[in-house]
Length: 102
Image (tube, rainbow, N blue to C red; front, side, top):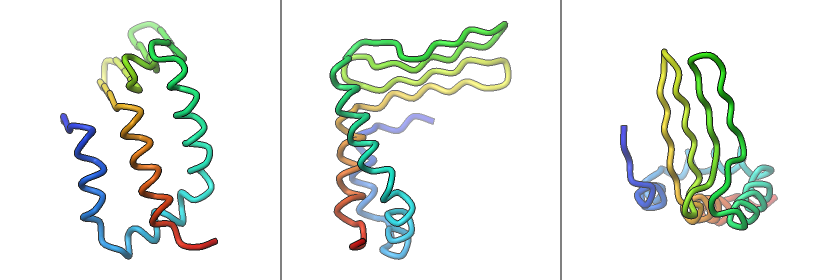
């Protein structure tokens, strides 16, 4: 399935409030870590962070042109994710804005 990353922050506005409360409560502790990770990833616009080649499987996690790229190629599955770091920042900011007071 292919979904443009820019659509994610827009679609988040359609999520009912009761679901937001649950998501923001569950993610509250991880949000500062996610901010820090994205900030650091931006310092390496084209870098491979993880690469595993094992028999007929290949996993790679990298940044490419300011995007987080995750590729998994195995006989039973293929996963290819490409998401701009700016979109991850937008989603994180929206989660923080909707988070209940601690």
